Length: 288
Image (cartoon, rainbow, N blue to C red; front, side, top):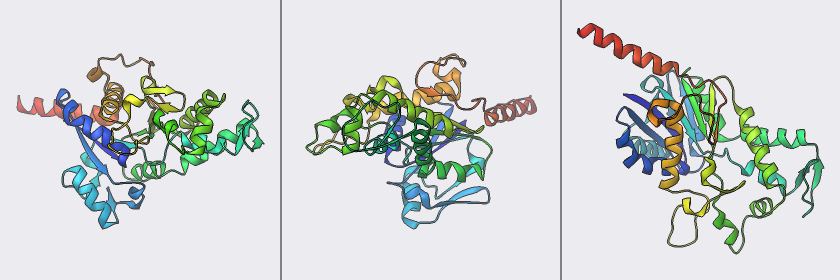
């Protein structure tokens, strides 16, 4: 059994819901979810060989979502995946409302002009300052196993139909510079990577435009449209993408396939998997 720890906020919900049914197709994989609303996981701290949750409220959330666990012990998992937690395309769109790079063509609004390099550096800094990246750093203090990062998916396109859409999203999504902003964000994600981090970008098939997700993937609500969260269908797509790269034989994709939205930022050969298979082989030999 290969066990993966997934840590995140409400954007981990579609993963968890999708895994309830999809997990049956992957009997050799176990997902364990460590989730709490908003940015509350920032309270966690490395302590020896584990992550502990300093807030009792957060520990309760984790206990509920993980099936009874109140701390994360690194040795129990073969890999880790951080989902959401402030690492998102709005790091670029919110900057665009008041700043433009030299290569940008949009002239609407009032803004300050900066170099392309400066604009990119600021987007990078915003992503590095996210709770997601802080959590990656804390995990790295307790393990040398593979760590993945799945940023928050783009807002659903229904956001533009609201009476008062967020100004930065409305301006950026309709701007001629939308593709350039996506390219800047993608490059910033690449720069997040170190030798020991792999970033899994939102699958292109789920995007309506460079900066917005298709409405068919937004989470249904009975009242005001939820433009921030995506649904189980999205969860199934992104989980399959993750597993096809995590262990290629699971998804039926060639290990060298570079199609799709996966940003390969580190060698995905997982030492932890090799170790697991080696142990299984040793056990079989000892029984024979």
